[in-house]
Length: 241
Ligand SMILES: [Zn+2]
Image (cartoon, rainbow, N blue to C red; front, side):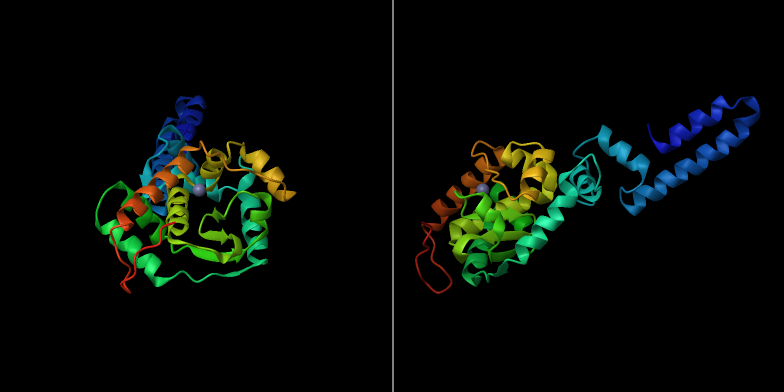
């Protein structure tokens, strides 16, 4: 129930004498609702609207993910843990510069049009930071990189173009889904389980069957098929191994 309708319902229960008051409270509540919408989905009744209409975008950003990320509560035990996981990984990592040829090739691929480009554009727009190291990869012995929203931790600093494209897709997926929704789907675990394991630095293994993982692999494959007929800005064949 929205704040406005709750206030109106309560006010009606007070009785006929309160009718006028209820009307003005209702009007005030509506105004609060309108203000909240302008402010950007932070007020109670806007949250309620979002829950009834999942997936509705606000200013181009899906509100469910954004709100889930912004409520550090018992409902989402992963939200507060996420920040500390990123911070403690950054403390054990160093910046990894991305080759200009990588970004230039991705931009050219985006220009060919198609759905892959929309995911890669989202990833590029987020201006992700790449890092060498981080403890998160120790919890995933089979992974060559791990994307934590805008921060991508790369094992050994080894970032070939295919991996760059793959992780950019994951960055884009975070933007659409929100952190918790992305990660629960990616690992096939509840938010509480991921939070528990990460706090203790225990393994969390990505599901290859996750739709987001499948999508990232499919896009890096299509990118490499396209890239096989391309040359880099310095005239070299693209190494998409
Ligand atoms: Zn992946």
